[in-house]
Image (cartoon, rainbow, N blue to C red; front, top):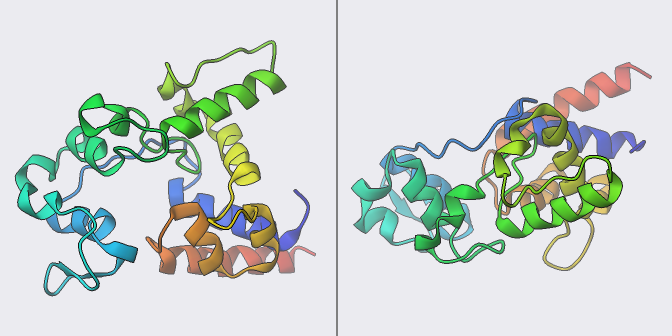
Amino acid sequence: MNDDVEIAHFLSQIGHESQFKPLEEGLSYSAKRMREVFGCKEGKYDGSRDECVIGRLREKLWTHETYYARNPVNLGNYVYAERLGNDIEDSGDGYKYRGRGMIQLTGKDNYRDFTVQHNANSPDDIRDFVNNPDLLTEIEYAVESAFFFWCNKKDKNGKALRDIAKTGSVLDVTLVVNGGKNGYSDRDERHSRVSKVIREGK
């Protein structure tokens, strides 16, 4: 990676997702916060009404509030069920394959694909991230998984994230990385700061 524009996007997105720490997604949200993050179509939530602007995406975050609020396991299993290669809510896949690593790799498909690529590139360090997902919280794999995601992720039209990052806006990149607009203002602010540092370092 040697394109300054792409590097600025890469670092600012990681900065938002994990603050450059090999974290795992916490998912211990208050009732209102879980609805804001996961509850609404297109992420459009009106906090003053505790309601979605254009419609609810996950109804049970309202109707079964006490089951999911402040309960990372239940919430993860619900909001990530039947997505990203995960099985149904009761399978436990949602929480098991929650976000981990520098860019919060999420979903069984991503853990499986990362396993394949890592083992192909590192035959002396064979790992199974599907059966041992917590390995992604180790610094070596946390960083490697971020590059894996960045180099393999595409938008819904099949355009590579790397290409978008070289020509697109912070919003364009955020929509691919996050799948929505969560944390957009922070990502934008970080991008401005990183871009300035890169320019001044020339």
